Length: 497
Image 1 (cartoon, one colour):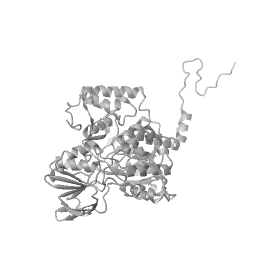
Image 2: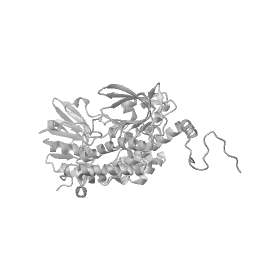
Image 3: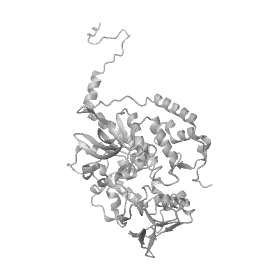
């Protein structure tokens, strides 16, 4: 049996889940979680102000929101554009059979064993099913994340898309679109847990004619009607995992042929990204000097990640799969109801297809994040800090990543930036150059949530310290009531004898 073939499992064991949730409750009680709210409330013109808004209820949004609540900051909102069960890509545009990560990764569990993926899976399907599981199936991972949302009682509002972020006299004003209408929210801090595409959108190369969209082409991370592609010829630009995933999915759904056009002569062989994980990379990479960090990321960028072997075998099982190495795409244009792809290499030629899938990844550039609006030009990017590096160390594709502070906060390019800019924390793929993969890959998700929550805690504590100190002065809970040494308030202490 193929390793990625799903082993049949019974429906989730409701009794097992109930027992696990009772254990979660006991664990949280033993750890005194969550603590009481310590942040003084704020009103602006009579309207309550949220301490933090988290955009996105996927795994990074869950990690950030849970960490905030577990640090005594429950006055938050989690705004999610998608419907329940469709947060993130797992059941929508992620077309691999399983996660790339091993099943043993704990997930956003906050260091609590009963909140790990393994605990949830065993409670749901049993120990035998866990032992037989090769890797985590996408839908299973989504079901786990949905369970976390529920068991942690996270304040998630679905169908809520943040379309604009503006400074508001020391606060952030968010415009939120919802089926019930547009509303505005004031928040002290904002966490953008908006995934791979949330830091600049999808990458569409300039040589692809925009007129192909939407009827003859799609970007790989977009919804695609594969049923409509039955019996058709599909051209795919790109040689990464997403390109293979989309080719296999199209062929499995009945496409006649899928051709991958790859500029590389040899596919990458070693996953350096997997070698750059672990406590040392997760917890200390951000401390590297900028020049050292830049050289490291140039190296990792040049190495690129290989296609997982499971994904390659999945594609190769399809007789209609064809890959063309050393074949860069020169252009792709519409010609009637067909796509004409011009390719170079040893045999330059034009090829006709019924449909085109562009699997060239994601862009990262604050200038392309529409909700940042007028704030975007003020965001410092790596091109602003790397200086006069030699040509061999220039990489245009990563120079536009934002420079983030120790708590993922946006940094100003110069003194003209509004001070509210640093109240925005970018916990998505845009954090990769500043913090490594902790805000984009499963192995580091807990680290990212803890780090951003710690940063917000420190900033709110300093900001509210006068009120917090005054509350300390007013704290008056006598300890010695019932002992001979109790002195009622406002009564003079007895003289020493």
